[in-house]
Image (cartoon, rainbow, N blue to C red):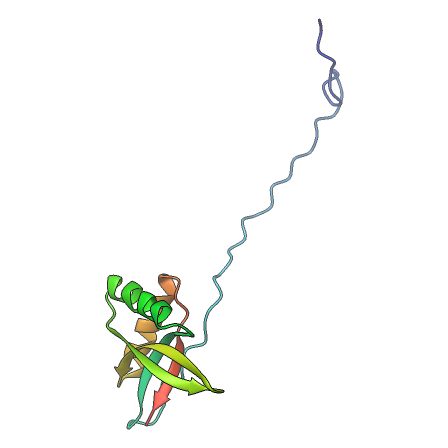
Length: 117
């Protein structure tokens, strides 16, 4: 049994043109850093999550401990519902806080900045 020739395999047929596109560099999405020109009296916390159950909050606190962060679970009433907020900090220096936030992001944790006076 003979294999059928494919298009472009016949003698004298032009070879199919293969064009390679140049590689494209894709930058990861950047999270906006907090402005480093701030009030010297302010300190900053990073909120790693807010949960309806204390066990979920404690789970996040444990995950943070595994990557080297000491976190606290704070309770707050929001619309009559108890919420458990997991926070890291405080940070007096914005650059220190931004480095910690970047390290959290490297570990898949998107943290919100909370400013305290």
